[in-house]
Length: 312
Ligand code: GLN
Image 1 (cartoon, protein in one colour):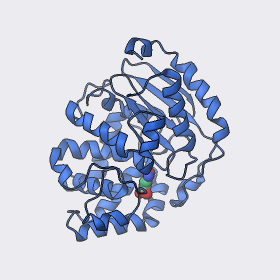
Image 2: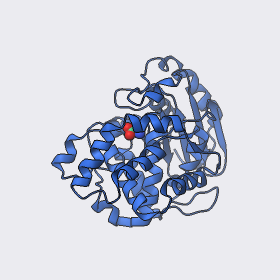
Image 3: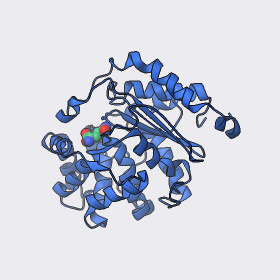
Image 4: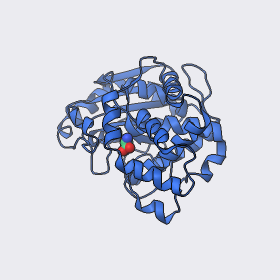
């Protein structure tokens, strides 16, 4: 579809149709329970927010309700680490899909403590270490950075979620200590984990997340603030990583069905972009077996099918 045709799409009608069509799926997913605090979210929630680069915005359902962003926040820490360390980052973390669950330990030993990509937990913990080692007051600095991206000062950590993640984060702690033994974590492990659990515990709405992803649809420059977050080349690369690794070992299925670079989180959010056109965030807490929002993936599949736009 040409950009002109895409701009004439009746976006509001499209997302309202989608909300109606995915309703029967809301009950079928399973809310993540390995972080106990995530169990307390109602599976009936569904929200969708679309931000066009020309400033138009469309939303439906609970698009302004805050939810736990979890792994979606890995995109923001990666953006910061990539802009600071540039290509040096890839000496510490790979760029290949893992084909393994997001919290898997197995691959890490075979590959000598270098995680496959920055979106599996091990990779995001290395990215967290890069940020912690290069910034003062790292978590507050990161929260301000994300507030800037979302153009919303009212973004905060959910402290109950943070405590829950920390108390049950044994697997992430194992990954971090294991990588430290290979010399791939520079800072103090507990400090890195607190930073990682902190950014995963941020509460944001679909509106916040959709706006915060706009710079990736605009060659690294945020259209609402004109601030450059990444070079055009870095933005292109980050989008390539989102496409190949953003939905873990379901990235192939997501590319096949949806056709957008996107990032999911176990809180049930998924953010995705079309370069040169838009960003979108959908939220529905019921997950599929890969840890991606079941109705969320379907909603994005319907979105590219109904509008005829995708990156392909
Ligand atoms: N904070 C979560 C964890 O570390 C993030 C996982 C996710 O959203 N896939 O397990």
